[in-house]
Each structure stands twice: as structure tokens, then as C-alpha cells.
Length: 532
Image (cartoon, rainbow, N blue to C red; front, top):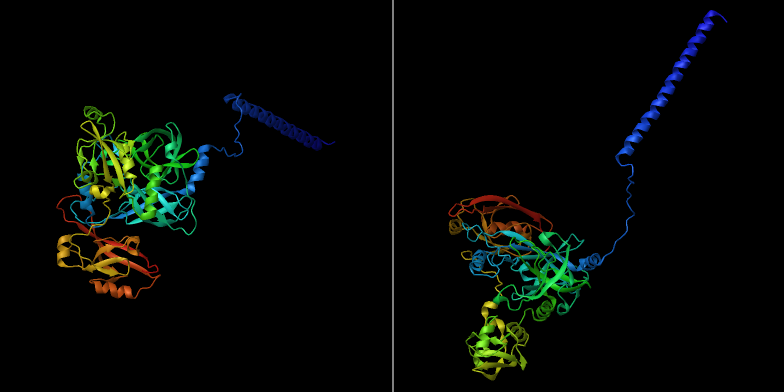
């Protein structure tokens, strides 16, 4: 082998040796690094086992079953209030009267929606607002039981079902202010699933219950608790017919009108009120017993109203000392007899003590009120009184409660607007009139010519697109409007399905007394439906 060949061989051996050494080094380094990493990983929690997520399994409980069972029967109610002119004065009168529900009286918050306008500088100025509540389906044909204060004075009532995004218009069938109950009806084109009605008399303190409703507008909310007390009166003497089931199931604004349900899935109450200093849940809620609600409901669907009997006396609860002083241990001490009422005509007088009704002993005022209220109007009852230590029977003809005591009658109705004359009916579901100088002065309006909206029909196209009473229409579909004739001419060329755009002037609310209202342009538009 030549010298050159030996040199080449040595170079090849050297290169091979170098590559082998590098390979061994890399391998050793990898093993050492892996070992170090493994050691580092195990040093954090060497005795810990990895967590595993189990396969999904339905863990059924009584409450979840009840929630599923009742969800098709509990509805969310949205009430729209397009305040009619004159409503502000009525609301202010309501607020000016002492009420057992005022904030300074033990914090009873009854969710009454007294939506009087705070904008005192704009008398008669309307505004639209919405309130939410709950209701329970009690008939497959669409009849729903709820609280009156959820729908009272609403210009439009809409109902929404669980897992159904559509809102259905509902109508008020009848109401009962004394129990704060109302019946509404909705037509959804299919039979509904009514809730099962229970017997509230069978309810015991300590029973588990759930409340279902839409607190703060949060639909299908379920809360659980127990019956804390029965027969609770929280409204004072003016609410003799209301004896509530008290519960610690969370009830909040928006729960009103929803059901209180027992563990058998039966409705035993209608959630109505809470005791609170904040306006929200504070551990004490009240539901009207379903037995009373059913009695009210049955009268409403039969006659459209609730009729209750009265004998025409006034009394106060808790007069045991007075009864004792007059020689009685139980009964009702008559403090006043309504002039011309049934008791007055029969001969009953103040300071008499009613001790029996139709031969049955009277325990207290609640006992007497319930029995008289359930006696058919026009029938004759025997009232036994204790007078000067002697028992005397009187034949009393039962009269309608609201006729004997008119202040108990419903205050429903939409008062006419002072200073606004009736307008011409327009195609869009509203009435309008020519804007006069007197209107301008009264409204303090200095803007362009137009026509004044005097009335908006509930549920109409005009209400749906946001028009309101006292808006001033200045253009329709970009065509100037200066008179009622202009509106009638434009609408005559429109047909269902056409787009309609309104330009109106609307006063911006101001809270500063004496300040000139600022009139600003407002635009409303929609597609004209059938029948408009």
C-alpha cells in the first residue's frame, strides 16, 4: 500500500472515530436530559394521580324533575305602558295617599308599578315603558293566572313561553284588586299545558316548595325553600282577604304572578310580594294561597268579575281587651255601621259584638269576612250579636261588597286627556288633529308645522313602531305633513306591505321646573301590516 493510500485510510478512520464519539455524546446527553426532566416533573407531586372526567350521566333530583314538568306552564309576561294623558295626575294621587306598603312601613315592597311621570315640568307628556312579571297557565285554551299589578293599566300585554322566542299578545279577561289577581288569555294556535292545581289548605309549615318565574326578566328561574308560615297578613286592615303563605324561596321583582309549587308539582300559591328594605330578596316572600286564587279565577271566567258579599260593618283586629270589657271572649266588635248598608237596615249598631253567623260561632274578623264574602249576594243570613249581655239575632240581606264600600272598587280605566280634543282616526292605529296655536302654547312648541297625535291604539302599528301621544308628525315617507288632510292623502296611497317612515318632533323630558322643553326630531318606521 502506498503512502498516499495509508494517509487516506488514517483520515477515514479518524473521521469515523470522531463521528462515533459525537453520536455517543449526543445519546448520553439525551438520556441525561430526559432523566432530569422526568425527575423534575415527578418532584412537583410524585404521589398525585391524574384526574379523569367521567362520561355524562343525568343526575335526576326531585327539584330538577319539577322544573322540567312546570317549565311549559310558566310564562314570562311583558306589560307595555304607553302612559295616557292624565295618568300622571292619577299616579300622583295614588302616591299621596298613605299606604301600608310604603318604604317607611317595615319595608313591604309590593312591586306596585305606580309609573307616574317624574318630569313634572311637562304635564301630560307621555312615555312608553315596560314591566315584566310571570304567570302560570291553568287552562289548555290559553288562560293564564297572574298578579293584577303585573298587567294593570298596560296598553299591551305580551306572553313568552320557555324555549319559544316568539311573543304572543294577550288580553285581560278580568281582575280582582282586593286579592291582586288577574286572568289573561293568549292564543298560540295550539293547546297549552296547564299546571296541576293543588290544595293550599293541606300545606304545612316546613314543606318544601319551589318558586318559578322571571325575576329581573330572567326567564324560567327556579328557586327552592320551605313554607315559613301560613295565614300571614302583611297589608294591614285594607287587605282583609289576603292571607299569605310565607316562604324563604327567593322571590324577586319579576317573580310576581308565577307559581309556588309543592314537591308533587302542584301549584299551591301565586307569588305576590316580598318583605324587603332594598327592593330585592331578603329571605321573606309571600304567595297568595291557590284555594283563594281558584275561587277568584272561577268567578272571573264565569262573569268577568269577582263579586263578594258584605253586611256593611267596620271593625279592627286585635280588640281582645275590648271584647272582654263588653262581656265576650271571641267575636267581632262593631266599630261603625255603614249608613244604609245591610247591617244598618237590619238594626245592628256600633258596639254590638258579632258572635255567630248563620248559627256558627265567629272566632274573629278574618273568620267573619271570609264567610260573609263567600255568601251569595242577595241571600239572607242570620247574624247573632251580643248587646248589653244579651244575644240578639238579626236577618241581614247580603249586599255587593264594592257597593257598600265603593273605595274597594277597581280604579281601572283610562282617563281622558284634559286639553286634548278627540282627533281624526288615521289608518296607522292612531288619532290626529291639526296643530293649532293653542296647542303650540300649551306644549311650548316652536318647531315646524305638523299634526298632533292625540291617541294611540294599544297593539297597533303606530304603537309598535314607537309613536306616542303628543308626538307631532312633520313628514311621512319624506313628504311634508302640515294638516290632517296631508296624512289622509298619503295613507290613501299605501297598501299592506309598504314601508312607512315618520318624522316627528318629540319633547325631551326635563326635570327642571319651568325649563323650556327641548323638542327633538324622532324617526319611526315599519312595514304596514294587513288591516292597517
